[in-house]
Length: 279
Image (cartoon, rainbow, N blue to C red; front, side, top):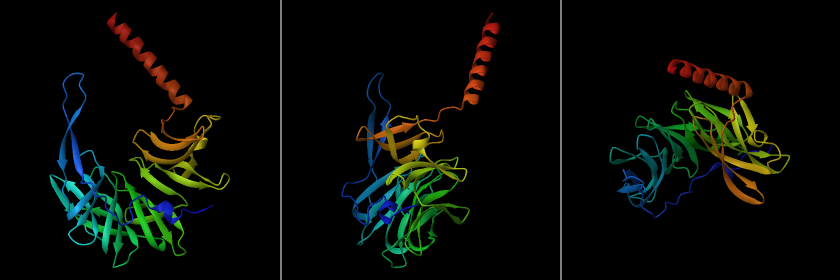
Protein backbone atom coordinates (compact mmCIF):
# COMPACT_ATOMS: atom_id res chain seq x y z
CA UNK A 1 0.00 0.00 0.00
CA UNK A 2 1.32 3.40 -0.91
CA UNK A 3 1.80 5.58 2.18
CA UNK A 4 0.65 9.14 2.66
CA UNK A 5 3.21 11.50 1.19
CA UNK A 6 4.34 14.69 2.81
CA UNK A 7 2.46 16.59 0.10
CA UNK A 8 -0.70 14.85 1.26
CA UNK A 9 -0.10 15.64 4.91
CA UNK A 10 -0.30 19.38 4.91
CA UNK A 11 -3.47 21.19 4.03
CA UNK A 12 -2.31 24.54 5.40
CA UNK A 13 0.04 27.21 4.00
CA UNK A 14 3.74 26.49 4.38
CA UNK A 15 4.67 29.76 5.99
CA UNK A 16 2.78 32.46 4.10
CA UNK A 17 -0.02 34.46 5.70
CA UNK A 18 -2.73 35.84 3.47
CA UNK A 19 -2.93 39.59 3.30
CA UNK A 20 -6.68 39.79 3.82
CA UNK A 21 -7.76 40.79 7.34
CA UNK A 22 -9.71 38.25 9.39
CA UNK A 23 -13.30 39.24 10.11
CA UNK A 24 -16.15 37.66 12.06
CA UNK A 25 -19.58 37.78 10.43
CA UNK A 26 -22.59 37.67 12.78
CA UNK A 27 -26.14 37.17 11.53
CA UNK A 28 -28.62 39.94 12.27
CA UNK A 29 -32.26 38.93 12.69
CA UNK A 30 -33.96 39.76 9.38
CA UNK A 31 -37.46 40.96 8.69
CA UNK A 32 -39.93 38.35 7.47
CA UNK A 33 -38.91 36.85 4.11
CA UNK A 34 -35.82 39.08 3.90
CA UNK A 35 -32.33 37.79 3.30
CA UNK A 36 -30.11 37.41 6.37
CA UNK A 37 -27.81 40.38 6.96
CA UNK A 38 -24.49 40.27 8.85
CA UNK A 39 -22.57 42.57 11.12
CA UNK A 40 -18.80 42.50 10.66
CA UNK A 41 -16.15 42.38 13.39
CA UNK A 42 -12.47 42.72 12.60
CA UNK A 43 -10.47 40.23 14.64
CA UNK A 44 -7.29 42.29 14.41
CA UNK A 45 -3.87 40.63 14.38
CA UNK A 46 -1.00 39.63 16.62
CA UNK A 47 0.95 42.74 15.74
CA UNK A 48 1.54 42.02 12.07
CA UNK A 49 -0.16 43.38 8.98
CA UNK A 50 -2.35 40.36 8.22
CA UNK A 51 -4.30 37.46 9.67
CA UNK A 52 -6.21 34.44 8.39
CA UNK A 53 -9.26 32.89 10.08
CA UNK A 54 -9.59 29.13 9.72
CA UNK A 55 -12.45 27.84 11.89
CA UNK A 56 -15.21 28.71 14.35
CA UNK A 57 -16.95 26.63 17.01
CA UNK A 58 -20.50 26.72 18.37
CA UNK A 59 -19.48 29.21 21.06
CA UNK A 60 -18.28 31.81 18.56
CA UNK A 61 -14.59 31.21 19.27
CA UNK A 62 -12.39 31.57 16.19
CA UNK A 63 -9.01 30.08 15.37
CA UNK A 64 -6.50 30.77 12.62
CA UNK A 65 -3.06 32.33 12.34
CA UNK A 66 -1.69 35.84 12.20
CA UNK A 67 1.50 37.64 11.32
CA UNK A 68 3.32 38.85 14.40
CA UNK A 69 5.39 41.94 14.89
CA UNK A 70 8.44 39.87 13.97
CA UNK A 71 9.08 37.63 10.96
CA UNK A 72 6.81 34.71 11.86
CA UNK A 73 3.15 33.78 12.01
CA UNK A 74 1.45 32.32 15.09
CA UNK A 75 -1.75 30.39 15.64
CA UNK A 76 -4.42 32.34 17.52
CA UNK A 77 -7.62 31.84 19.47
CA UNK A 78 -10.15 34.67 19.32
CA UNK A 79 -12.56 34.56 22.27
CA UNK A 80 -14.50 37.15 24.23
CA UNK A 81 -13.41 39.95 21.91
CA UNK A 82 -9.68 39.27 22.30
CA UNK A 83 -7.12 37.49 20.10
CA UNK A 84 -4.75 35.26 22.05
CA UNK A 85 -1.34 34.29 20.67
CA UNK A 86 -0.99 30.51 21.10
CA UNK A 87 2.77 30.71 20.71
CA UNK A 88 4.94 27.96 19.24
CA UNK A 89 6.84 24.84 20.27
CA UNK A 90 10.09 26.81 20.21
CA UNK A 91 10.22 27.67 16.52
CA UNK A 92 9.21 30.73 14.52
CA UNK A 93 5.79 29.71 13.16
CA UNK A 94 2.62 27.87 14.18
CA UNK A 95 -0.64 27.24 12.32
CA UNK A 96 -4.06 26.13 13.53
CA UNK A 97 -5.68 23.11 11.89
CA UNK A 98 -8.87 22.60 13.90
CA UNK A 99 -10.79 23.47 17.06
CA UNK A 100 -13.53 21.90 19.17
CA UNK A 101 -16.39 23.39 21.18
CA UNK A 102 -14.23 23.46 24.32
CA UNK A 103 -11.81 25.94 22.75
CA UNK A 104 -9.04 23.36 22.33
CA UNK A 105 -6.96 24.03 19.21
CA UNK A 106 -4.77 21.70 17.16
CA UNK A 107 -2.35 22.33 14.32
CA UNK A 108 1.39 22.32 13.69
CA UNK A 109 4.31 24.37 14.91
CA UNK A 110 8.00 24.65 14.18
CA UNK A 111 9.89 23.33 17.18
CA UNK A 112 13.17 24.04 18.96
CA UNK A 113 14.53 26.18 16.16
CA UNK A 114 13.81 23.57 13.47
CA UNK A 115 12.09 24.40 10.19
CA UNK A 116 10.15 21.13 10.54
CA UNK A 117 6.82 21.09 12.32
CA UNK A 118 5.21 18.94 14.98
CA UNK A 119 1.52 18.52 15.68
CA UNK A 120 0.31 20.41 18.73
CA UNK A 121 -2.66 20.48 21.08
CA UNK A 122 -3.41 23.80 22.75
CA UNK A 123 -5.55 23.39 25.85
CA UNK A 124 -5.91 25.37 29.05
CA UNK A 125 -3.26 27.88 28.04
CA UNK A 126 -0.61 25.25 27.24
CA UNK A 127 0.68 24.09 23.83
CA UNK A 128 1.65 20.40 23.93
CA UNK A 129 3.93 18.74 21.36
CA UNK A 130 2.17 15.54 20.19
CA UNK A 131 5.38 14.16 18.70
CA UNK A 132 5.79 11.77 15.75
CA UNK A 133 6.34 8.07 15.05
CA UNK A 134 10.10 8.63 15.07
CA UNK A 135 10.27 11.01 12.11
CA UNK A 136 10.71 14.76 11.87
CA UNK A 137 7.21 15.93 10.90
CA UNK A 138 3.61 15.73 12.10
CA UNK A 139 0.44 17.76 11.67
CA UNK A 140 -2.93 17.69 13.47
CA UNK A 141 -5.99 18.30 11.29
CA UNK A 142 -8.99 17.98 13.64
CA UNK A 143 -10.16 17.49 17.24
CA UNK A 144 -13.53 16.42 18.61
CA UNK A 145 -15.22 17.50 21.83
CA UNK A 146 -13.70 14.54 23.70
CA UNK A 147 -10.23 15.85 22.91
CA UNK A 148 -9.44 13.11 20.38
CA UNK A 149 -7.03 14.43 17.74
CA UNK A 150 -6.34 13.12 14.22
CA UNK A 151 -3.55 13.96 11.82
CA UNK A 152 -0.47 12.56 10.15
CA UNK A 153 2.98 11.84 11.59
CA UNK A 154 6.11 10.49 9.97
CA UNK A 155 8.20 7.47 10.90
CA UNK A 156 12.00 7.43 10.92
CA UNK A 157 12.07 6.60 7.19
CA UNK A 158 9.92 9.65 6.37
CA UNK A 159 6.75 7.68 5.68
CA UNK A 160 3.57 9.39 6.85
CA UNK A 161 0.94 7.54 8.88
CA UNK A 162 -2.43 8.57 10.24
CA UNK A 163 -2.58 9.02 13.98
CA UNK A 164 -5.23 9.21 16.67
CA UNK A 165 -4.11 11.03 19.80
CA UNK A 166 -6.13 10.51 22.95
CA UNK A 167 -5.40 10.39 26.68
CA UNK A 168 -1.78 11.34 26.05
CA UNK A 169 -1.07 8.52 23.58
CA UNK A 170 -0.51 8.71 19.80
CA UNK A 171 -1.74 5.57 17.99
CA UNK A 172 -0.81 4.58 14.43
CA UNK A 173 -3.96 3.99 12.35
CA UNK A 174 -2.24 3.13 9.07
CA UNK A 175 -1.41 4.66 5.71
CA UNK A 176 -4.01 7.32 5.05
CA UNK A 177 -4.68 11.01 5.63
CA UNK A 178 -7.48 11.79 8.12
CA UNK A 179 -9.27 15.11 7.71
CA UNK A 180 -12.04 15.07 10.32
CA UNK A 181 -13.37 13.26 13.40
CA UNK A 182 -16.83 13.53 14.94
CA UNK A 183 -17.89 13.14 18.57
CA UNK A 184 -18.55 9.42 18.04
CA UNK A 185 -14.92 8.93 17.04
CA UNK A 186 -15.68 8.28 13.36
CA UNK A 187 -12.82 9.49 11.15
CA UNK A 188 -12.93 10.40 7.47
CA UNK A 189 -10.26 11.31 4.95
CA UNK A 190 -8.47 9.88 1.93
CA UNK A 191 -6.32 6.82 1.25
CA UNK A 192 -4.35 5.51 -1.69
CA UNK A 193 -6.01 2.67 -3.62
CA UNK A 194 -3.44 0.31 -5.11
CA UNK A 195 -5.91 -1.27 -7.50
CA UNK A 196 -6.82 1.96 -9.28
CA UNK A 197 -3.68 4.02 -8.58
CA UNK A 198 -5.91 6.79 -7.24
CA UNK A 199 -7.01 8.20 -3.89
CA UNK A 200 -10.34 7.07 -2.43
CA UNK A 201 -12.49 8.58 0.32
CA UNK A 202 -12.79 6.44 3.44
CA UNK A 203 -14.37 6.21 6.87
CA UNK A 204 -12.51 4.72 9.81
CA UNK A 205 -14.60 3.31 12.64
CA UNK A 206 -14.45 0.43 15.11
CA UNK A 207 -10.83 -0.19 14.15
CA UNK A 208 -11.62 -0.64 10.44
CA UNK A 209 -10.96 1.55 7.41
CA UNK A 210 -13.79 1.29 4.87
CA UNK A 211 -13.72 2.61 1.31
CA UNK A 212 -16.75 4.89 0.97
CA UNK A 213 -17.03 3.87 -2.69
CA UNK A 214 -18.13 0.44 -1.45
CA UNK A 215 -20.83 1.97 0.73
CA UNK A 216 -22.76 3.90 -1.93
CA UNK A 217 -25.23 2.49 -4.50
CA UNK A 218 -23.49 0.14 -6.95
CA UNK A 219 -23.28 1.31 -10.55
CA UNK A 220 -23.60 4.98 -9.65
CA UNK A 221 -20.67 5.93 -11.87
CA UNK A 222 -19.30 8.02 -9.03
CA UNK A 223 -15.78 7.78 -7.60
CA UNK A 224 -15.32 9.45 -4.22
CA UNK A 225 -11.74 10.66 -3.87
CA UNK A 226 -11.65 12.33 -0.45
CA UNK A 227 -13.88 13.00 2.55
CA UNK A 228 -13.37 16.32 4.30
CA UNK A 229 -15.93 16.38 7.12
CA UNK A 230 -18.34 14.30 9.20
CA UNK A 231 -21.00 15.52 11.64
CA UNK A 232 -22.46 13.83 14.69
CA UNK A 233 -25.32 12.41 12.59
CA UNK A 234 -22.77 10.55 10.48
CA UNK A 235 -23.32 12.73 7.42
CA UNK A 236 -20.15 13.12 5.35
CA UNK A 237 -19.07 15.83 2.93
CA UNK A 238 -16.91 14.32 0.21
CA UNK A 239 -15.47 15.15 -3.18
CA UNK A 240 -15.40 12.92 -6.20
CA UNK A 241 -15.51 12.45 -9.93
CA UNK A 242 -18.77 11.92 -11.81
CA UNK A 243 -19.01 11.96 -15.58
CA UNK A 244 -15.46 13.26 -15.85
CA UNK A 245 -16.12 16.25 -13.62
CA UNK A 246 -15.04 16.90 -10.04
CA UNK A 247 -18.02 17.56 -7.79
CA UNK A 248 -18.91 17.85 -4.10
CA UNK A 249 -21.28 15.37 -2.46
CA UNK A 250 -23.22 14.91 0.78
CA UNK A 251 -23.39 11.32 2.02
CA UNK A 252 -26.19 10.52 4.48
CA UNK A 253 -26.49 7.19 6.32
CA UNK A 254 -29.30 4.91 5.18
CA UNK A 255 -31.00 3.11 8.10
CA UNK A 256 -30.46 -0.63 8.12
CA UNK A 257 -33.58 -2.60 7.07
CA UNK A 258 -34.25 -3.80 10.61
CA UNK A 259 -33.88 -0.28 11.99
CA UNK A 260 -36.16 1.12 9.31
CA UNK A 261 -38.80 -1.54 10.02
CA UNK A 262 -38.73 -0.83 13.74
CA UNK A 263 -39.05 2.90 13.09
CA UNK A 264 -41.98 2.36 10.72
CA UNK A 265 -43.71 0.09 13.25
CA UNK A 266 -43.21 2.64 16.01
CA UNK A 267 -44.61 5.49 13.91
CA UNK A 268 -47.60 3.41 12.85
CA UNK A 269 -48.32 2.47 16.49
CA UNK A 270 -47.96 6.06 17.60
CA UNK A 271 -50.37 7.26 14.92
CA UNK A 272 -52.93 4.59 15.94
CA UNK A 273 -52.58 5.59 19.59
CA UNK A 274 -53.19 9.26 18.77
CA UNK A 275 -56.28 8.40 16.72
CA UNK A 276 -57.73 6.37 19.61
CA UNK A 277 -57.01 9.11 22.12
CA UNK A 278 -58.65 11.62 19.84
CA UNK A 279 -61.72 9.45 19.31
